[in-house]
Image 1 (cartoon, helix red, strand yellow):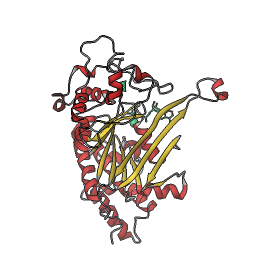
Image 2 (spheres, rainbow, N blue to C red):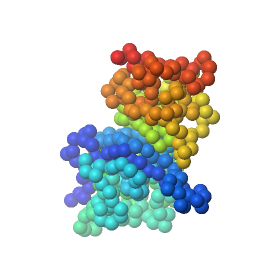
Image 3 (cartoon, rainbow, N blue to C red):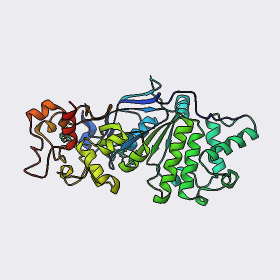
Image 4 (cartoon, rainbow, N blue to C red):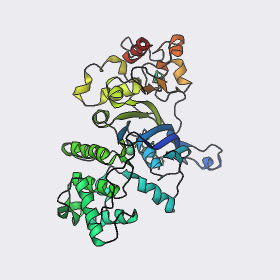
Length: 378
Ligand SMILES: Nc1ncnc2c1ncn2[C@@H]1O[C@H](COP(=O)(O)OP(=O)(O)OP(=O)(O)O)[C@@H](O)[C@H]1O
Ligand code: SF4
Ligand SMILES: [Mg+2]
């Protein structure tokens, strides 16, 4: 008798997990007087983040260091209490703090960490880690033979075969890629519906990254999993993810299908991110002077984030309105579901203000091509 499901009958594309206006502010106490302040200082790590994870789909969350990606993953894994917003599992609001409800939640939503060495206990074998996961989540079966079969199945699912070769190994006896495969197998021990993978390949040698991404893609298809793939590397999002969302300084700034977001980026920050990515494939056709960074490449303070659009101190297209009003999600119009939170895509704002008017008299800075495309589309 098998204890783990081989995918489910749930339709591909069914929404499993939904973030709705997810917000996390970490309190910081800088001075004694902050203790008595009504508005104590806080790090605005995540603000008003909304998206859906769907069965059989990989959704990439891309952004530079400190943009709030891991905080989003930890909020979705219910490891942090949230400051605001909601997390819906199959449309139902969830709020779990430890105990039985937490265990029931993590059975369906599993988190994979960046560093497989740190996430596995060095004094325990692969067998111990996987048995524990199967037992905690009630998938170990009734007999020793059931357990052995489930262990074999888990290792086969992550292509560590034959399983007997790996079961009694300690983490230090495995390569980085094998350790990450064990960490993935442990997550699969819960038989989850959603996997949150926080930079799952960034600590691995370049040569084995592709193998792990291919494994995750294969699992997505075979087990009909909803996967959140967190990465710095927008080029890998294009290769691996069905949908890509871009975060900057705690806020979502662009989203759409991965091909469109990476090949026809609309938000000036996404364009900058693509311009800085070491991927020769994409440079043709996108690299241009419109992606100049007006700042010194530094992200803003998250304790006192800039008013209006948080990218305005660096944006070569910033207009007066950008320093005051927060841009909403605006449809780009090239492909269904492609949006950017940028005033450049609001025709009324562009008609009233001149793009780049805060950027100084730099003749190289022009309106981004994506905006022209939008106007044609209208
Ligand atoms: N526990 C915490 N207490 C206070 N501030 C925190 C805490 N965790 C994260 N932060 C802050 O929240 C912001 C977002 O951090 P987060 O780790 O989510 O970013 P990230 O996008 O995952 O970055 P990286 O790519 O470096 O992993 C950062 O400014 C970080 O310093
Ligand atoms: S044009 Fe304005 S709204 Fe758009 S990214 Fe630049 S500063 Fe932000
Ligand atoms: Mg992180």
